[in-house]
Image (cartoon, rainbow, N blue to C red):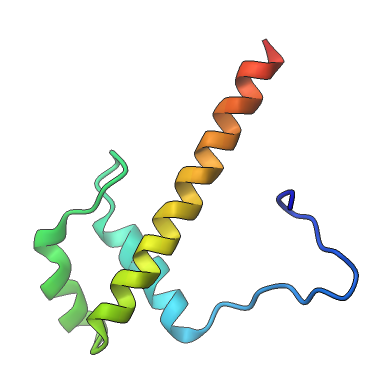
Length: 82
């Protein structure tokens, strides 16, 4: 489905509290090269009160996959525009 597209009868996804924490952790741990600075994970988890680290890891994987796919789509669009 195209970004920003919503089909009739589909509810837009709603981020829950754990998803919002994962997005915040992503912003804090992202190293700018597509990865994370894992050394900071224990400090960030303690600071934000994260108890379900396995769930956080799953959500971080989803965030990174989404952002990588979005970047790939942007690169494809640039290549086609030339």
